[in-house]
Image 1: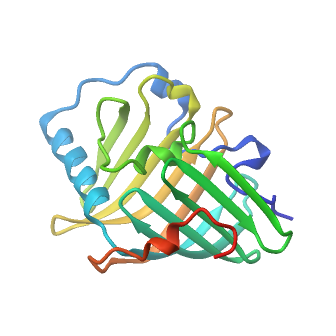
Image 2 (image 1 turned 180 degrees about the vertical axis):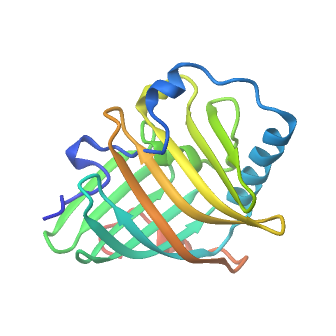
Image 3 (image 1 turned 90 degrees about the horizontal axis):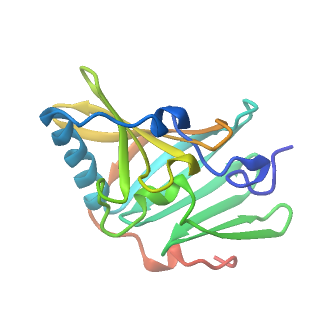
Length: 207
């Protein structure tokens, strides 16, 4: 049985592809092409209005959940269909998780969560955010992020397809202080260019 709040219980508190030791060891200065890739990711996160994707979530024990992701710059919503009806809304510096099966509601700040690294408005992948790694393949791009003042609080890794110079988000992976991982694999990601209604991201358990 999955926990009532899959992003918080079992001391997960989010995760990524790199270990926290890698972040604490320091990051070399980015090469010009890496700085270009970071700027492209920043632009993607700040301009992907009306983004929707199907997702499959993998928990550290190998269990699976799935549903639909909705994203506007600074706002994220996950509606789960399996293992049961649940929703996660992250916006305005806070996170709400509702498990309709158990009639439970959990709220927390995004200030110490890796997911919060990409939910500022606008997103700036510099200053308070440390880019710990950039990996660019033939048709892929991956960046890993941490908080510059407290990298031990978690790593967030974003994986993109990079076809014809166009990015498309494929993976969100998060690692907590104990190196436990949560991974979201996305498919059919597309942005309409029009923001989702504000009501979709209200921190209310009722909608």
